[in-house]
Length: 104
Image (cartoon, rainbow, N blue to C red; front, side, top):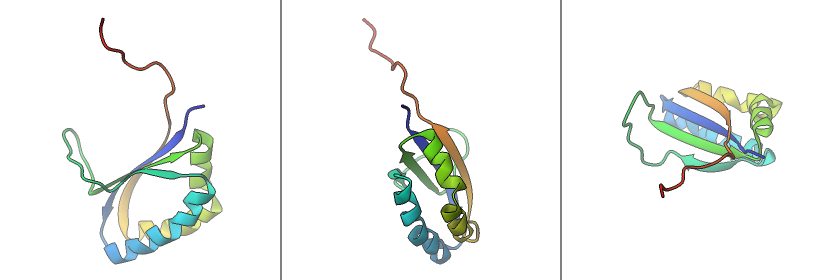
């Protein structure tokens, strides 16, 4: 079964207030089995538009990723983020199909 992911791009306007969001979201993410794959590491935009901070969370599956976002627990902490940042957040299903192979 394909995993589910959150892909978030964030511009933080109030770093001190954003810390409240970071502190509050951990318990929710743990409840839904989320794992950080990317959490604001170095990046370079080589095409298109970007934001200052990029995050990728992995969930057991797409349904769980959506359930986390829709949960009362997450909705209770979202205000900490929206008060301190502008974000784009995508919930997306992973891919388990064939992969490129070397020619030959």
